[in-house]
Image (cartoon, rainbow, N blue to C red; front, side):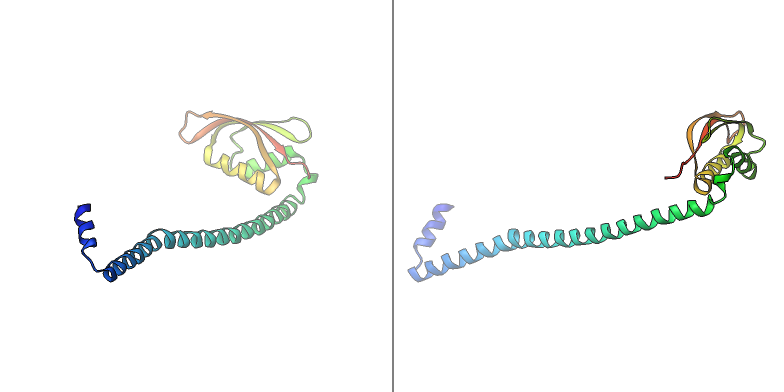
Length: 169
């Protein structure tokens, strides 16, 4: 096949050969540009735009983080405003009663100034989780240790946990 192509090229007039070489070179350069250079340039442009979008998103997220932290501090100060003078035992007992866990509380035992140990028996799991959330978000009290096992009744648990009051930063 190469011999046929070579014979064909040799049979052309010199001016025709120049036109074939120039046309072939132009065609090859156009194909290289369209298949390699242009997609590369487009990809770089897309990456630059994505970097700019990510920078904007990062700046927004950093601003949102600062705002969230400020709101969390303000919320803790507002909701826990009267809690610093109340005993941890009292807060835990009162919130357990309001979370409909009063019958499940078997024991609340202080463990130092900033923590209490609580034993629950046959407590509704969903009520218990909501109670944990209320303790943390409204009163700055978090679950430090927790162990539980399913109760004989479906959807209920027996639990032993230690609750700890967050100290002021």
